[in-house]
Image 1 (cartoon, rainbow, N blue to C red):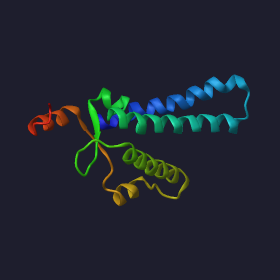
Image 2 (cartoon, one colour):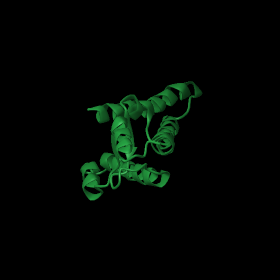
Image 3 (cartoon, rainbow, N blue to C red):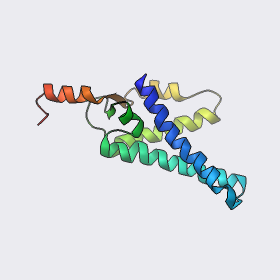
Image 4 (cartoon, rainbow, N blue to C red):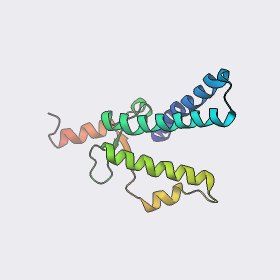
Length: 137
């Protein structure tokens, strides 16, 4: 449940930027397609910055932090780096686009094809494991 709520918080942040720009740019009297395009590009940029850059630095997003979650690599439980997060962000972007434009949803297919999808775990579980391994300094 906490993963879903964290995702919802993060998604609301990203979509909030989209709608904020739509509303903020209305007085500029731009063409509808231009207005929508600017807001969509901003949404994608914020998504990348938040889900890749912020997570590579702090290991978590705002939504995950609120629900005490951090990202780990599924193969070894280690900290995900920029390249790992950027790769998965790109896969997610392609899956989302094709889900909206294709005849059938592709997100489930991506999850089956790439089972190493990054996962979020409780921060206290990471700290507990580090203590057990004597890595807590």
